[in-house]
Amino acid sequence: MILSTRILDIVLALLLALILAIPFAALLLWLWVCEGRPLFYLSERMRAPDRPFQLWKLRTMTVVPPEQGVSGGDKRNRITKTGRFLRRCRLDEVPQLWNVLKGDMSFVGPRPPLRLYVERHPEIYAQVLQSRPGITGLATLVFHRHEERLLAKCRTPEETDAVYSRRCVPRKARLDLIYQSHRTVFSDLRLMALTALRAINWHN
Image (cartoon, rainbow, N blue to C red):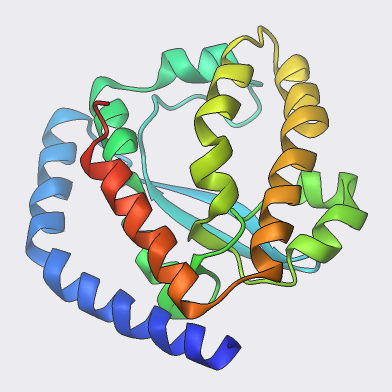
């Protein structure tokens, strides 16, 4: 299963990279004109409890100093108009094809967590991160919009952190573990298809 999933990841990532090369270059040029630099956002995430990596995304928010805390509501306000479109269509995650090719991520799996939450919930992530993190997954599809609504109500960075840690982490972990226990190559393909359909119907 692990070998077949890895082969599928590499084949699909290379195929998508070839198909999207010219459109993605045009998108980068458009972003450079509309939003300026930096074009990419890099975030340290965990592939396993002791294996960090750099997650690549297109930048969708205004830049703030790294030492400045941001609440859930503030994050929502900082999303640019272009960034909102990119997120709805999930185009901001196209650079993660590089993470897939490097082996840091798979197409399907639990979303890679921040080190902070892995250290805070070691018993949860010791189980969840037995699978390679993914661009999409069951928890991503089922819980993502509910998570956004929960965090949007937060007014301070401390509240955002507490709500995510207490209410989001355990629920997402349960969904990811349920999926892992029944996972097949065909179920991965189905989740990828559902993710693509949601991106196409982003306005609904």
